Amino acid sequence: MLKEALQYVARLATDSQEIIVKDINGETYVKGDAHRIPTDMASKMRLNSLDSTVDYIKDCISGCKFVLPYVVNVGYKEIDVYSGLNERLERNVLIETTPLLPRISFDHWMDMESFVIQLKTCFVETDNLNKLVAIVSSITDESKVSMEDDGFGLKVSQVSGTTIKKPEEFQINPIVRLAPYRTFTELTQPESRFLLRVRDGGKMALYEADGGMWKLEAQRNTSDYLREALAEEIANGTVVVVG
Image (tube, rainbow, N blue to C red; front, side):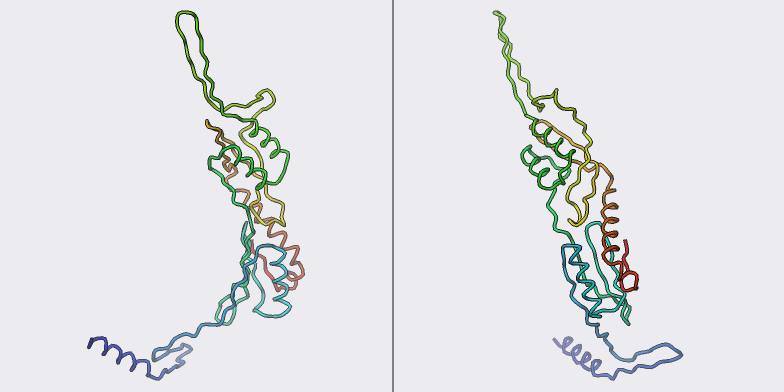
């Protein structure tokens, strides 16, 4: 108890000391317990579309609300907008934009109905998609029992597995090009390669097979969209697009 009391008294004595600031040969020296007062920073806006992001950037510039130029950092499904550097070399984080996207299950086994629902609701409709849906819808999980009686004995056999109802109508390529909704809806969704797998029980799964190259395309498309929408601001030096 005595120790805590002495520490409290010592802290009061330290806090009451006069803070002395001196400049010696171009270097700043401080005597006393000095604390930096943080700069007031803006709360960032959380947006979900490219159009709203462009509108907000233009509004902030016209109102001269923050230090210019604004830096727009572009990712494949996220955009961060920063102000210019203030006198303390700090930036305000003005905007964080992420698209509203459906949840898509890749690398995950699904039953046929769930698989088809995901294809029809989370992917851009293309010829490849329609062909895949037709193939998947024709897959059935069968279990057959056959009996053979030759008069001397009864032979019973069972065959089970996943088959196609009308195999003569389909040629299955395990690699298919599809365009899931994975980036901003104002953009053309990148098409990429997927591996289709089917196993017994009628379970199906899609595996991404492009090594993530679609992310570079999505980032490039996002950057091109913003450069066009903010062409005037970029030209006069009030906006810099990175990415």
